[in-house]
Image (tube, rainbow, N blue to C red; front, side, top):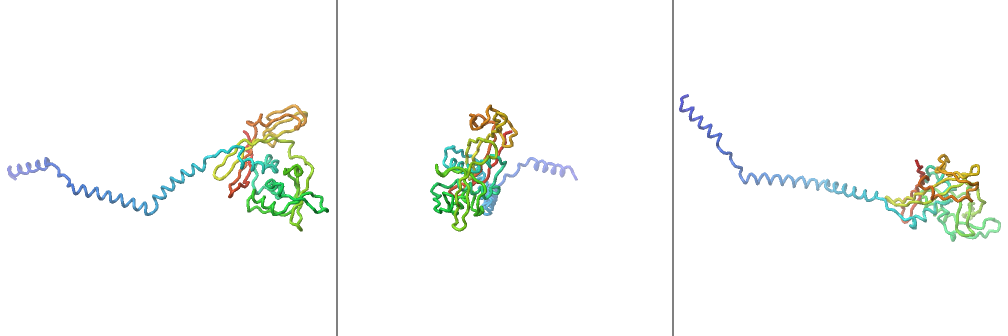
Length: 294
């Protein structure tokens, strides 16, 4: 290779190195942008077409709804539902305050009748005109059964049979006290027998409704309870039904004559929580549970 040839090639290489790059065509740029937009549009269509977008929106909506559902709605203790439901519990109060937990399956036939009677009114009873019967009042079985199913649910099986236990009820001055029902299968009615006061499960107790709220179609009642025991000239006050956590003692030998108020022991008292489920236009009992004070 001669000198001239090498020189020409070197000059060509220099020209290649310093040659400015070619600018992209405006049409090419437009084409690239258009393809990107078309791809995005296609992806969006697929997401919408397969309902993926709806799923995302639904999840966001459900999350917000769940947060709202979980919020407690405080109820005044004077609320009609609160006071009515709390009064329904009275016949089985002795069971609730000495049982760690009570659900519908733990409620006996006698107890269901006692609970159902709490929903009745004086006009649901009628005078017993049968002179051979000692009972002054009678009650149609269907009336009692409807009341039981209202408070315990339509699936609760009610047996038409005599009651062995008795429960405190109050309908009027003439119709109040401990009552026991006797079933008459001929007339399909219950005869109402008034019985003398029987010994309580424990010496005595005091309760007070302290809180009520709604949450997720359920209504909760919170009650505080203390338990009293006469012991060697003193009244012992306990926070638990096992009578193991002594919180105070007062001089005296009769719990009915000593001035003791649960208000003085609310912070130390155990809590009983009652749960009711919304069912149509009323609430039905679900459970009670004692939460012990640690």
